[in-house]
Amino acid sequence: ARGGSSSSSAVAASSSSSSSSSDQHLRLGLLDIYGFEVFDENSFEQLCINFANEKLQQQFNQHMFKLEQAKYAEEDILWEHISFRDNDRIISALEGSPYGVFRHIDSECSCPDGSDSSLLQKICDYPQKLTGPAGGGGALSVSSLSVSGLGQGRGLPKQQQAAGEAEEEAVVSRKVNKWEKKFVVKHYAGEVAYSVEGFVEKNKDPMQDSVVNILGS
Image 1 (cartoon, rainbow, N blue to C red):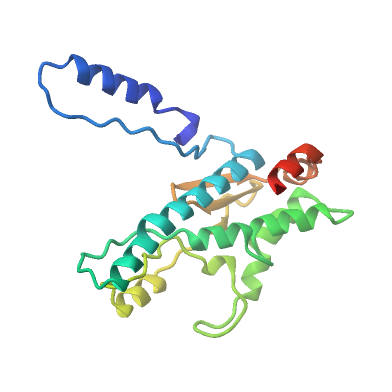
Image 2: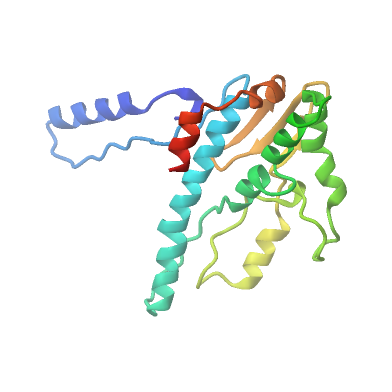
C-alpha cells in the first residue's frame, strides 16, 4: 500500500457496512496486495521493495494483457484492444545490464574506494554519456527508458506506438536540488526520490547461506 499504509481496514469497513446496509446493493472490497512504498525519506530498503513490486506488476501485465490479447489475435477473436502502461522499461532501468541502477550499486561495492557520492554520479550521469543517436544503434541510456509505453497488440497502429515512444520520459534522473544526494525513479505507481546515503554499506550486508539455498531451490 502506498506510504506503507494498509487498505485492509478499508476493505473490512466496506464489508461490514455492506452487510448492515438496508439496501441490498452488491459491493466488492478490493485489497491492494502490492507493497509499494514512498515516504518523506526513501532509502535502499524502499528501492528493493518497490523493485519487487515492479516485477509483480510486470507479471500481471504479461499474463492479463499481453498473453491474453495475443491469444485473442491468434484465435482471430474480435475485441477492443486494451491499452496499458507497460513497465518493462522501468525494470530495464533498474536491473538491466550494464547500466541498470542495481548494476551500478554492485559495481560501486566492488570498488575499494566506492562511495555513495560516486554511486549517485554513476546512476545519474554516466549513462547519459553513452546515449546513441536517435533511432540509431547506440548504447541504451537510462534517460531513454520510459514509463509512457502502451501495450502492443492488434488494434494499436504503429504510428500511435511511434508517437508514444517519441514522448518518452526519463525513468531515472537526478533530484532537482543538486545538493541533495538523491535520485528519482518514475515507478509504475508513482515517482519516488531515493537518498543514496548508506546504499553502498547496506548492499554489502552478507546474505545468510540458508536464504541463498531457499532462493536457489
